[in-house]
Amino acid sequence: MKLAYRFVFYFGGFSIGLLFLMFFLSGKKTSCAYGPDARVLKNIQIKSIKYSESVQNQLNNSVIDTLTLNSIFKGADINFSKSDTKSVPCKTYRVVGDLYELDVENCERIATIKNLIIR
Image (cartoon, rainbow, N blue to C red; front, side):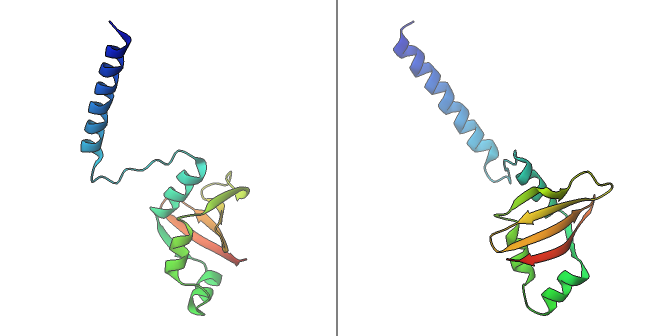
């Protein structure tokens, strides 16, 4: 078989496979969370979020609002060197955004924002 025919068959099958993927994955909330930062942030976001007293006071004093707190998780990173990932039953993570840092206690069903640091 000629090399040109091999390329035609390969790219033909590849394009059919892409069409199948587009058909099956369209409309679904699929995401790729392969990195450790992305997995932890996704895990925190799917849980109900509670606030400690100090963070609740900052929310009440209009230093920051809940919409801004939720938007921090979209583009944030996890600082694993300042996180406590070995604790049981809840792990504590340092979430670092552009202007804010959060200490989040990630339990099985609830994520609690313990501390809010404004840089």
